[in-house]
Image 1 (cartoon, helix red, strand yellow):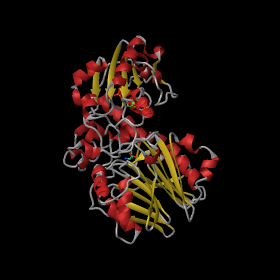
Image 2: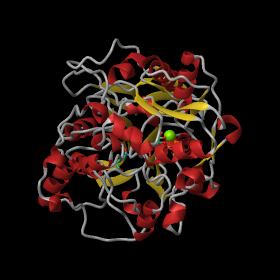
Image 3: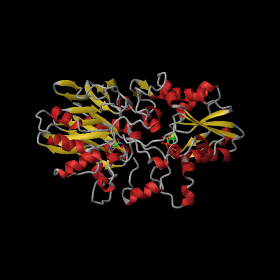
Image 4: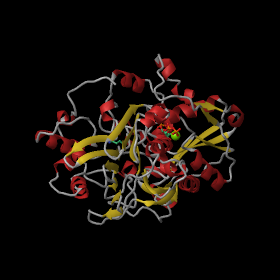
Length: 496
Ligand SMILES: O=P(O)(O)OC[C@H]1O[C@H](OP(=O)(O)OP(=O)(O)O)[C@H](O)[C@@H]1O
Ligand SMILES: NC(=O)CC[C@H](N)C(=O)O
Ligand SMILES: [Mg+2]
């Protein structure tokens, strides 16, 4: 879903953002129960999940009688590096969140974890994903008198839990979950419990870990590795897990259905050192590159990855094709997303601020550029030109995923369909647009083969792959709303 421009500062940042054409990250969640350093460990876990969202970060802790909340716009390191901030988060249980917004602006009141006072006590929640009926639920709740404090889809779960007439917290939470459509990996904290939940299809990831005998929940295993925690297992699709003084409970409140995790976690989002659904992301990306080399080989002298996320696929392509792998593009790691460039001419140089040609590798060579995805295609177009300017003789582009033809509504911030290059161009016109000598994408079956399947079974696809196939696995209730005013989330215009 394309975000509306936010505050004036955010609007300017987006307008001049050299990365504005890419897929946006999602969110990351973390939680720990019964550990003396709960907040500090949560900050470290969030630091490892920073790639999932850079807009904002927050931690809520519980000290046995009160909850404590610190939420900031910006990066985890900027918000939580100082001892005094961690000292303001006392207690032995905590949850945390890094945000890239999908519903609701980048403003402080939308920074998670969200917290609410319920009649049974406090409840904090962090959400990765996006509800496809969040706007409808919100409208219904507001009609019934709910006073919304944020503009995120996430807040509706707090209201649904608050309104439930059930006695036990877990029953109230489950009653709330039953009303949600779309994607969610939740971590929640009450005065007694650490709670986790994945939507019935398990679209977004969530794992259970353990540190010094204390349970942990995290979006990815890289958040366990940073603190020396061990991986226990994934939270299953449609599973609700509860950790408290009495131990562990697992609930399966939904009719059983086959999991359909999001394929994009493997292609692009997850960190390559994470194990997602039992598979090392790095190995999967290499397998996608190798599959691509089998499907669409190219006669060339060097294989050049588009850093960072294209690197493992390019390695796989190089190993399969036997063509040498070389770093023909060097990435500058100090380009901020919000770097504001004053003129259109300088803005057009955007990609060069991030990527530079390594002439020594490229000059006079036939090169194959390998990247994981094309969104609007502007980055790829500039990189092809950069390679030609650096003296490349031929530039072939290979993409280790199929063309992205359909927008995402499950936690990835993709542009609207009319801005997706593959939604408006066929293969040849895409090739012409990016200016490559040849262009090829991995097939949909090829993605499944890289995942160890014989191909995509259209009757029972194993992954959420709507970006390529248009097969959305949940209802898209909010998309059906005809009147755009019904999508307005707040009347208040506010600064950061
Ligand atoms: O359609 P395009 O404009 O070519 O955009 C697609 C690019 O965006 C993503 O990379 P990102 O900018 O996230 O960089 P990273 O690989 O360093 O994470 C993706 O991996 C492609 O490289
Ligand atoms: N990217 C995400 O997972 C976003 C979570 C939630 N929908 C929000 O906008 O805050
Ligand atoms: Mg990339």
